[in-house]
Image 1 (spheres, rainbow, N blue to C red):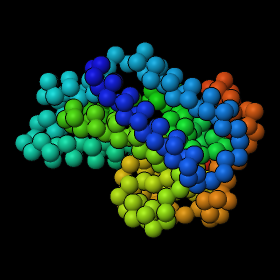
Image 2: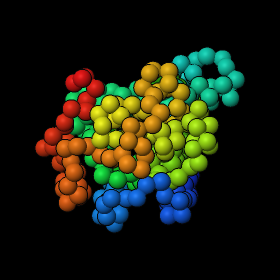
Image 3: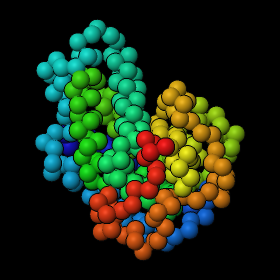
Length: 271
């Protein structure tokens, strides 16, 4: 679906530029490592992952939703509900799956090895939001395709969710300052940068909190919500304690990190 790709690219580029400008005008924290070095690695991963997905999978989530609709697969394609309600249910359930998937990747050691590439970033800005190992992205797509085929959400719900997920990943990883009172209000509904930044703390208890990407309700509902980092946002340490050398966080090293890197004690089931 060429139009779907174009729509997603336009939204991605627009939100990316907006957050870049926001980070320059009003940053939340002072970065500790070379922005250029990090961006080369992180943006390379950002462009590599869609290419890998398109080469491996004959169809992606939008195509699966369309096939499910045409074939009458999935729960929502077999119940009589108003379209708007199917749209809402589809988007909310997909968001719940992303939350649960995130928890699982922190719970199973072999999956944590893949996910720790995302957490090994020594700084936290919008490029961290798309810094995921290609194998993790492949597994995530398998989960997404399975859920879409079983749930049968409207095509519009999947497209809207994909756009929102990409946009929110950029937004809530942004090194941007939001007035505390506004942040307090926003996080009753959505995951804000201050809320998700806690999840990237070097302190293990904080790493294993605030798993949400879009809706903040899942962390509150399942007891994984943590309001603030112990040392405050300006003084907290970002990343993983076992990966502190910037010269080892280049793209080639990040690709092999899951296979040779020390997983530390972050996985939830080790506590």
